[in-house]
Length: 262
Image (tube, rainbow, N blue to C red; front, side, top):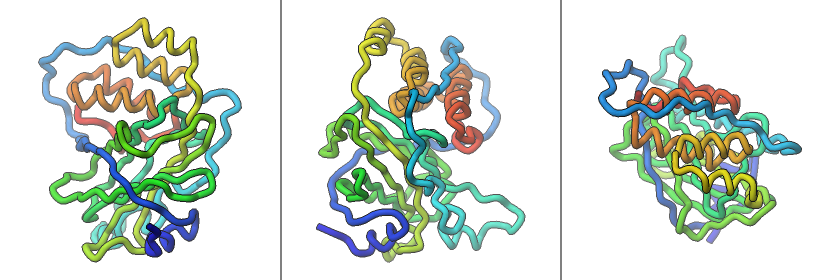
């Protein structure tokens, strides 16, 4: 089934879309000073993203959701003129196509402080044809927060050595999505499993070490998904928070907007 309203919103970018399901979760951004940590801290480990050799730059430049500075129009109106509003952003490297070895990876997006009623998540193939979409209700969700989109066990599947894009749109009105709604776009390419990396991963059960191995091999989505899951589990762990900041900074992302509660 095709949706003309969605097509209008994608007139700068892509074509038409179809629907299915998606699982998701949130983590609230908290910039406050941490309370004393009473749990065991993870061993410090640098997690630095190193792009794969020959990996091209993303073809799309709309990753910041440019309309209304990446926030809903009513939120721009309510923002003081001298304040720099946060914006929605796909958590992907700034200068290279983000890669995964997974058929059904996990995607992460930073949501701004927003009055949006929902978000729409869409996957698109290399021709700009949408093949997966889901609307997620934001009622009761505190923002800013990091939205985690887990495609595991869903119908959407990525093929090896093919490029895709994913888009998240803020639905700003209770009347539904509109062409002017802000959006963020991320790139994704599935690559073949690497024997050397697989061997190293088999030798450790430490999630922080696994994240570092993925990052050093240029496998972005697995690296950030491992760290995101770890920081949700241990939000007060300084070593994990430091590794998260290192990973984002090494990919050209502003970690101050997406720092976990710590």
